[in-house]
Each structure stands twice: as structure tokens, then as C-alpha cells.
Image 1 (cartoon, rainbow, N blue to C red):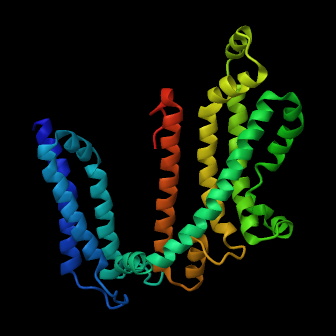
Image 2 (image 1 turned 180 degrees about the vertical axis):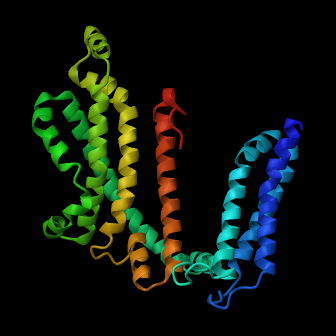
Image 3 (image 1 turned 90 degrees about the horizontal axis):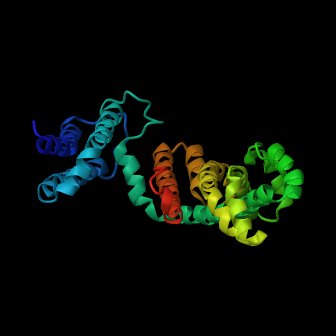
Length: 320
């Protein structure tokens, strides 16, 4: 079997899986235990997947580069579609999983479509809180890390505090934060900033500590000032570690976001998930989790794109 034939077979797998899932979802009757959705959203999604997968399969014959790229990811897409098929059978078709906690895919997709305006409003509130806290935590973390790395007085006084206070989960500061900040928004932003600050500080300072002394000796020989050495030698050399700290801080910020929005926020994805959980509306809970995961994915992807643009010499070393 030639390589081209094997690529064509792999490219066809997502279409076959989607077509089989569509047939099973259409032929098998729904369980009476599941409440009926307003529209067959899962069937609509499957039809869209079939059309897209078929179009990509046919386009591969005219664009070999596209076929090579798509055939490499086709088995994974097939596995995702098969997982949705099994989940659909275990929920709405046979009700093998608890109906209350595992709603049908029709209802989950229905929430994403019918409640899109309200979820979008909650997302905007979360992004405002997240960006404010993330930018503040990243800025202070970089400055603190640079100070610890280059100034022995800062390292003497500040680094012990970082080692003692940093490992404490940011959510543990909630009782103190609530009485220290004037508004819930500022308190929540501080918790997110704290979650980003610690890993950014530690990785930035460790990155500076790992720089070879020959770099600084060469800069001093050429007559570079202390400011030039810090900004043009030390900080660029420490950026690989700095970005790793930002990646870790980003993950922690999303974890903290859910808890921070429990402090009294009126909107937000974390608030939406907790609210729907209290209402026992688990279709809405899963829809909120999907939106949050996509948002986190996009946020980290943008951060990786920024890293590849800034650290051109290390492009592709760390992949996402």
C-alpha cells in the first residue's frame, strides 16, 4: 500500500466515523428517561462534521500539502467523534449514566446556541477580570523576578518572602482580601494577579540566575552600563524561563477565576458554572466548562504565538 493511498484512507476516517455516528443517532430511539430537547442539535452538528470532513477529504486530492497535514490529525478527530458516539449511546439512547448528571448532547449544544448571548456576557465579565489580574500579576512578577535576579538587596529581603508566601494558594487569602479591598472586582483581580505573580517571579529570577557569566563579562568589556546589561542582556536571556512562568501562571489564573467569581460577582463564566450547578442544570454546567476550556486554549495559544515571535531563535522548542 502506497503512502498516498494510506494518507487517503486516514483522511476518510473522520467522515466514516461521523456518518456512522449520524446513522446510530438517527436510527436508535431515545430513552424516555431523558427530557426531549427542543431541536436535534447533535444531529445538526454531525451533519456539519460530515460535510466538513468530506470536503477536506476531497480537497486532499487537489492539495497534497493539505492531505498530509489533515491525514496526520485524522485519527485523533476520529477518536473524538467515536467518543461522542459512545457518550450519546450511554446517555440519551440507553440512559446508562445518571440522567441528572449526564444530560444529552442535544441539550448541551442547545445551551451553547440558545443561551449564547448570556454566556457571552458572562465571558466578557470574566475576560475583564482575567486580563486585569493577569496583566497586573505578570507585570509585578517580572519586575520582582528581575529585581531578585540583579539586586542583592532585593534578593536578601524579597526572595525569602516569595519562598514563604508564594506557595500558599491564592484562594487561601480570601478572608483577608475581602476586608482589604473596597470592591469584589478588585479583590478578585488581586487573587488572580497573585496566582500569576508567584510562578512568574520564581521562573524569571531562576532564568536570570542561569545566565552564563560570560555574557555579562562581554557586556562589561564593551562598556555597557548596568541598565543596558539588565535590559539588553539579562532580560532577553531570561525570557525562555519567564514565558514558562507565564504559562504556569495562566493555568493558575483560570483555576483561581472560578473561586474568585464566587465572592459575590453578578456575572462571569465561573459564576455561571456555580450558579447552574446549584440549580442542578448540568447541561448548562457542561456548556460553561466548554466555553472556559476554549477560552483557556485560545489564551495560551496567543501566549505561545507571542513567545515564538519574541523568541525567534527558540521557535518550536516548546510546542502547544
